[in-house]
Image (cartoon, rainbow, N blue to C red; front, side, top):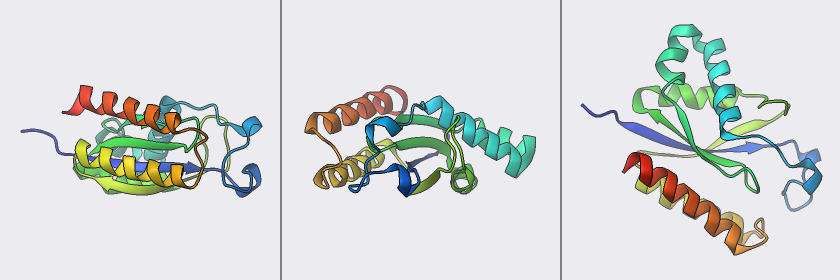
Length: 156
């Protein structure tokens, strides 16, 4: 029997004081975090919320598949269908990643297959690009290409 996954598209939000008027992080306030930092923060919260057994059931099988650390701070996390609600709740409880405090993680979309996740992420990036949050269309294309490579190699 195959494991049915959910793909959660989420975004890290910084406090308003660290953003410029267009909503983009200023160059001196870039977050130097990786997908592993996000994943470990989620696992720590899962242990706090659900204990060792709950974290073992839901936290160990959740994997950050994509993270745009440069511009939008959008990431995709793959989790089993049975743990989707627990992971979404844990995302909302994360207050810090690595040494970055006072962050908020919001869920943008939940998808049931990699193909719909890619099309939804493409739509989200187009919205960001249309609001001039990306300086160059190549940034958006490169982020999209990296996502396709990650999801195609592991899920399709």
